[in-house]
Image 1 (tube, rainbow, N blue to C red):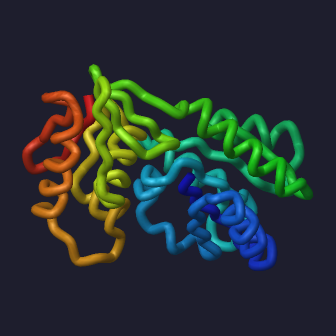
Image 2 (image 1 turned 180 degrees about the vertical axis):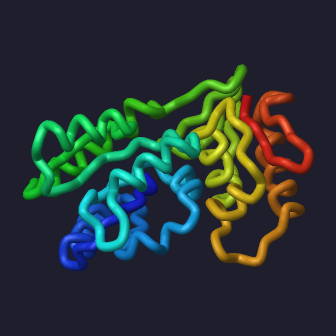
Length: 213
């Protein structure tokens, strides 16, 4: 699982990152929320774990912007705010779960796993093709196909946003980050993915991006 952790407490953030990685999670920890310049990059993660009381911007504002941008990645609020009013506010803004501090780290792991299973399951169908998310393999009948790591990351981004057009710029930010890569590279990996999916599964919106139908 790819987890984005936004937590300004250095001791807690570092400890959670180390703990989650022991369970096989890939964790990106943002200590300063100002580094989240483009909230659409959240779409490249399986779960966002979000603190509410940050230094420069409230977690509520970040959550609101994420949902207004149409990013539907599961969001787990992790905070010392424990009033029912705070919980109501976050759930109304689109939070999926709410865990108050102090907490047992193992409970956080269990809640994250539950969120991911609930949202995406372990296998999905695209036409006559099955995508095994846990095994990272694609099956059609008795045939099995594997993708390169980059192609798999791109496919996961399209799956998380299934039915929506994912702009090429968002793909570049989410899959390649700061690497100097252009749209021609995106087209090459889209071609790799198309080889293992049913014909017509990925639509190209010229000059805009791609959509998994």
